[in-house]
Amino acid sequence: MKSNQLSALPAMMLLLMWLISGTSLAQSLPPLTASEKADLQHHRAYAFLAKEDRHIKGAWETYQQLKNSGVPVQHFEVVAIGNAVKSITAEQESGKFIQEKSDGAFSVTVCQIALDRHNINKKDLPKAAGVISNGYIRLYQLQAKEYLVIQP
Image (cartoon, rainbow, N blue to C red; front, side, top):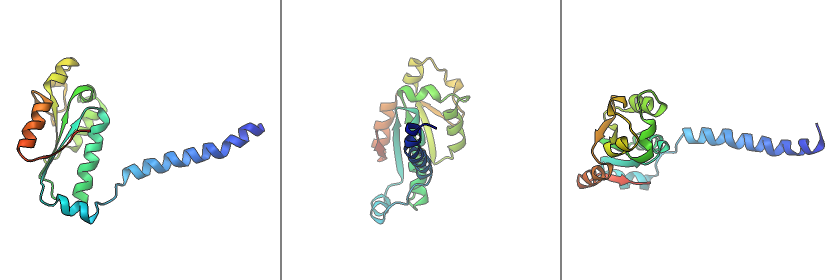
């Protein structure tokens, strides 16, 4: 090896270690603090607006973090709009993820307007995914039902 290649080796090792540790940190979420748990004890329903594919998995992790911390969750609904719907077909990774993770308390609804804009037939969605007419109207509806709503 040339000396300039050797000098780059420690930086490459550091980058590799950072990438590996970042992956493992993302998989084990910390428990909620006592303050977070206390603030959320009186809420049972949550909604999460997913504009991108990665938001669906982020919502699932949030749902798991709440449950694992002992926060009661009656319902956690992810409302998929825009580009997020492009990867929700039953054959794609996100569609399989939704089918596997939907457990009654965690559910995903998909905006019909977004499906139409991306030329996706609702028959191509996983069976666990519900279809709603308008994602924003669904969020208003959930807010009216006193859901806590996040819109990233």
